[in-house]
Image (cartoon, rainbow, N blue to C red; front, side, top):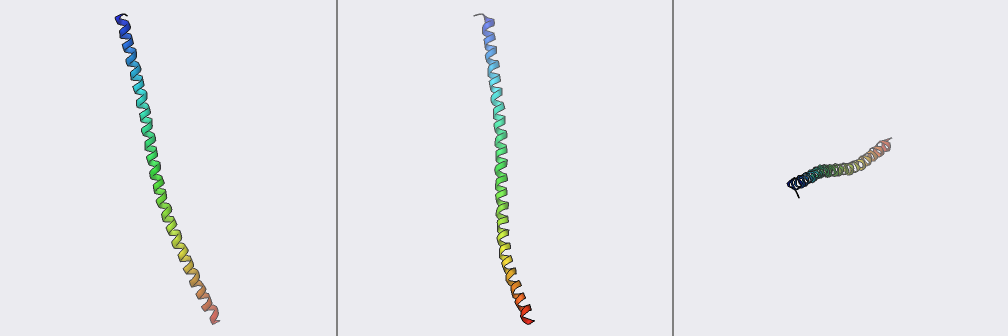
Length: 84
């Protein structure tokens, strides 16, 4: 083989390796982007879970308060109508 042919093969190999490396870097960048999105989504799910737990606690408290209000309203009604 001539020197030019050897040099041409060397250049082609290097170009192929560079293109392969570039594709790998592009894929790694996409993977990192997806990982970032997934981390954001996990954080959003955890925040949502916290908010739902707070809402559940407030709903339980409102249920207790509504029973207390109903009981107090019944006592007031009995007192009011009992005096008439």
